[in-house]
Structures are given as C-alpha cells and as structure tokens.
Amino acid sequence: MPNKNSVKTSDFIDVPFKIHPRVFAALGADLVTNDVVAIIELVKNAYDAFASSVNIKFGENDKLGSYIEILDNGSGMTEEIIKDVWCTVATPYRATNTMSKIGQKERRVSGEKGLGRLSVARLGAEMSMLTKSNDDSCWNVRVDWNNISNNTELSQCHVKLREYTGAIPFETTGTRIRIYKLKSVWNEETYLDLQDNLARLISPFSKINDFEISLSLPQKLSSETIKIESPEFLSKPKYLIFGNVELSPKNWTHRRHNI
Image (tube, rainbow, N blue to C red; front, top):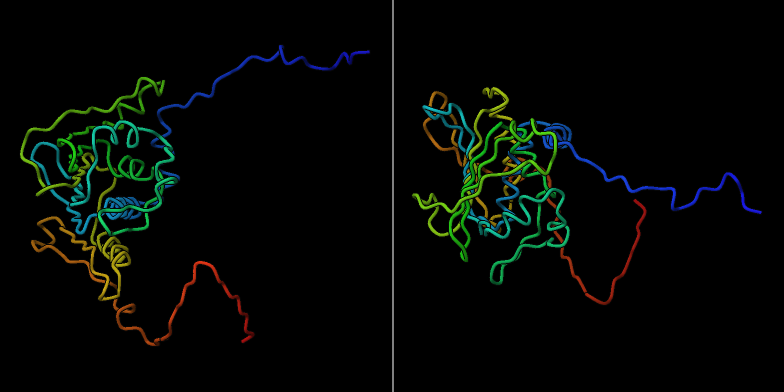
C-alpha cells in the first residue's frame, strides 16, 4: 500500500540559483582582507603570466584623481582569454593550469583563482586594463564596479572591451591595470606595509633572479622608484643548514628520527 506521505519526483520543480551582482563587492571584501593583500594578488598574477618585472605606481590624474597602476611585461591576454577566463567567475582555468610555461621555462602558479578581479574591485570603483599577447592585438578592458553592483541581474552586467590602437605601454607583451576612484586613503604606514609584503615575493637566492618588483610612490612622498629587495633576515640569516636533496621518480624512502 503506497505511503500517503511519500513525495513524487514529479511534484518538484527546478528553481535556478540566482547571483546578485553585488557578489563582486561582497567577495572582494571577504576574501581579499585588505588593500595590501589585493595588490599582492595582482603582483602574483603578473608572476603567473611569466613577467620578469612588475611596477606598482601610485599616481595622480588631472581628470580622474588618484589611481593605482600595476604594469608588467608578462605574456598578456588574448581576446579569447579575456572573454572566456577573465570575464568568467570561478573559472577552473587556474585549477587545471597549475604551471605557466614559456619555452623551456616553467613557473608554478602562485595567484589564487579569481582573486585578481576581486582585488581590483576592492581597490577602486573603476578599472582600465590594457593587455597584449604575442598572438593578438592590444585590448582595452574597462569595468565600472559600481554600475555592476547597481544592477539586479548578473546577466545585465557587462565589461567594455575594444581593440586598442593607441600607444602601447610595453615593448612586446604585457598587462597594465589602472584602478581609479580608490576606496581607501593610503598613507606612509600602508606604503611601508605594502613594501614589506612585496619583499616577501622576491627570492633570497642569487641564482633565482627572474622576477623584479619596483614601487613608485606619489611625488609628494618620493620622486624615486623603489626597487624591492628580499628581506634582510632571509639574505643574511642567523643560522644556515646545508644539505643535498635527491629525488627519484620511482623510489621513495621515508625515515623518521626522534629528536
């Protein structure tokens, strides 16, 4: 005898999840804990794009006011990558591409999946990005995060994309991100905090010198570009341990010693 309390599968209807455009602002505030972390994430993205140098600049524009610029000479992005990866929320691209490779050189990806866009949204209300790869034209991407947040449906949210025909700020390939309408006021303390965190991205080993970071502060604070160096406690440690590491793809030995 059928159970009167049983529920037929046919009684259910499919109700789709909806995501409000404010997800960018909400996730940016929750996942990117502060402005320094946001810039660090963008620098990691430059490293993942196989840049050998990246410059962070705090500048002033007569029309748009204060801005933050991150300029690198990495591999850049094609139109396809912009549309299918950069403009796709929670793409598995980083999960399936854990190594970046150019020629015979490889780097393990360091940036978190999707945090680059959230970092930009945390830092300022508007963004203009120029990016160029070897195989494509230079592209200009513009985003107004306030406009996106004010929409009610994610399907109504768009970024502006066009082929850029002006002066290109890199010799061959690279990406330049400019963030306007900054949400925070930077001071000497936060600049020093940023400099300290950037230093941790520089390898202390002299044989590994394939990534340089420079920092340009507002003119009123400094007219010189600061080259970021590895922390002194890493390059001049109090204690040193020397040894050899041998890796075999087939034979692994585990040893445990009580100390």
